Picture 1 (cartoon, rainbow, N blue to C red):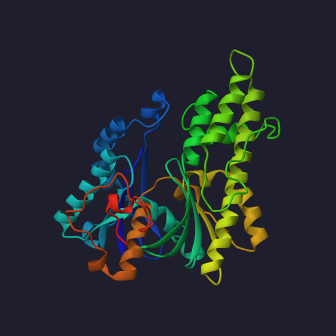
Picture 2: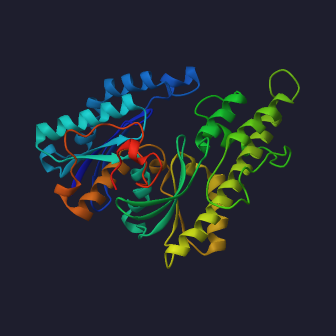
Length: 358
């Protein structure tokens, strides 16, 4: 089985051809960092126009690199949401056009499901269901019980900001530029985390929810208390180290609560999976590895290329759906509407608004 995947939910235009054995025959990712860097963040209109300009060429190049004809595809899949709606529309309409022209099933994939299943893409290290997922990115911070394709239960989420967004804002406050996550991580390597007394929001409280707004504000206050003028490199490094350590402590605490809750409903947890852009942060991985070792649960993190937005995970999620229910049941109609919001958990408060499937 071979599937073409398309991802355009934010600021990367991506296409990939993936097989049901987990082999990525070809993958192309076009970053828009240079277009958005002058603004210090992603501008939705700029992102949508860039997707529109490059998507046809990227799909053609990817198919050519894969050595695969459209007649060899089982289906074409695209991110149907959540995301910046202009970009999502570009990807969905491109996939629909290919599906109509080539008489292929069109499958709309929830972007969060792509991350949720990405740990199963590698055939040599395929995680068995059920497992606990910590999804941390610029737009999402959630703990989910992953029980199979289309079957997810949300155990906790952020009540304000996503951790990736907090990384980006911290970098912006300290003049580190965009994207902020890698810049903060690099600066933190040379810093002293204990210098600034930063809070650990929600740590020790019942439940599995997150909050990062207060931590972000504390970084701002600490920065404002420094001497006027350009920040010293030592100050930047120490603040970044302190912020990153606080974030790691919060993630470990909230995830420990989620493990306890998960084990109340399942005989065992086959793995703690961390996915999303923040999962590429090595300090965060090390902090969660300590937790996993203490709980005697394997920690699984996809390769860095599968942590950030990519089309391989979208194609793989479609393969998972086809394998579980067959091409006909997995197919979405051409009347599918792109969604700016699409909760992965059908019982989430906003699921009715999003029109999410169970």
